Image (cartoon, rainbow, N blue to C red):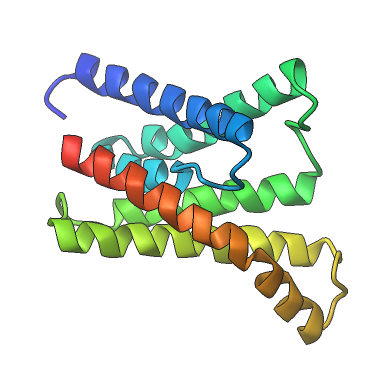
Length: 171
């Protein structure tokens, strides 16, 4: 980024984008079709020199969406602590993947990174679901957790690919 003001404006835009995409998606009732991991990946790539900002963007977007849900809808915005910690960890993992990218990736590489960010989010967030014991603490329970999450993963991939292509392409 060339100027600090541009960085701040882009960061604010990304936080608002993350929160509003979650809110809009909730009204569409399409599970997980939000480009939140793509926003984390993009933040990591763009704000390499401001890592704390890069990691704050997806977390703050998630938080603002949760505040809206908690205050203005019947959707629980803030849920159990382990679930929220693993979801936040998943977002931070996608951002960390972005910070590892040396330069703005080419289009094919961008798609690969977006698939990686979505997959990291899927693995980490659903492991949090398993840790809570909903399907038991066995290999069968772990397997069931990930199998049950596959329909959500499809929409996570679609949301992250669409959002990431727009973000990276627009940038």
